[in-house]
Length: 198
Ligand SMILES: [Ca+2]
Ligand SMILES: [Ca+2]
Ligand SMILES: [Ca+2]
Image (cartoon, protein in one colour):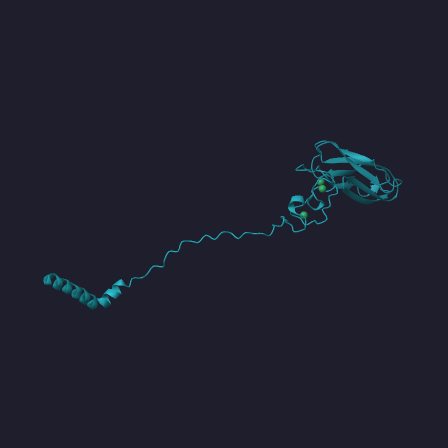
């Protein structure tokens, strides 16, 4: 029917006009800010590492941690004098075996010797001192470099729970002598002159 055809034609024209009239405005209106498209994060699979991982060597001494007797101290020689699996450089008592987490026994801290030494016999003229109370009776060896000048016992015993033990020095004659105390790998030397004291 012509009426319908005419109506359709009008509508098309109107639409066209509307579009042409408001084209600029519409364009502006439509020119919304475009949001950046949300790109889903791409999950790239980790590269396949074909090179073998070198064994961990914390101190970089060339000995892997798994077999290093001092993991945090560089000791490529792995020296372990007391063979307790603690390398010398990280062994609190390198001359006394203390495997695992065993504590080191008390060590020789120092020795006192009277000064001067006087001809005759000096009771309690010397004493040895440990770094900690002895867990058991501990013998400290004593040596005189010149027994004809001063004589010391072969050893002195530090009793359990004690840190100090005294010893006598006998047979003193004028001259020079060195008294040495030894416990484990520790030693202490005291040189003395023996005099005719007034
Ligand atoms: Ca090491
Ligand atoms: Ca050791
Ligand atoms: Ca040790």
